Image 1 (cartoon, one colour):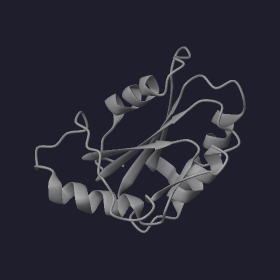
Image 2 (cartoon, one colour):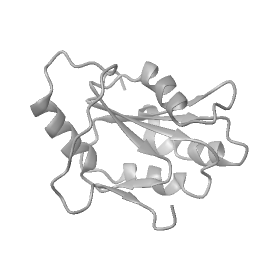
Image 3 (cartoon, one colour):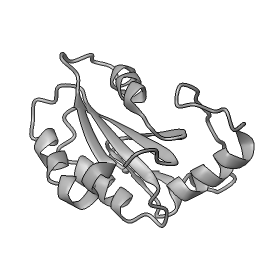
Length: 142
């Protein structure tokens, strides 16, 4: 995938119990013009293997980056992935979160409306939602 509209960055550390649900939610999107970068913060369990199992389903839309040493903070892998992002807009997703089926599409439409055409992946935008619940669903036990 050359230049997608949106890059979804997922920082991950020892997320073997959650990352499959996260990636499955990305498979079921109404909007498909996005790439996913999973930035692994040196997981010590089978998290990386779970993500690798999704490579055939996503093809070149899924990239996996691994830090050389554990940072202990999700911001470091997010920034690492941000450097590799090819999308016009960037969205961050935690590895234990799932997106509703139209979240990247909603994000893209709002960002396209609000942001100047010169927006680059190096800038960030937090968008408030007028929905009772965000289009990102957090697990009850998280």
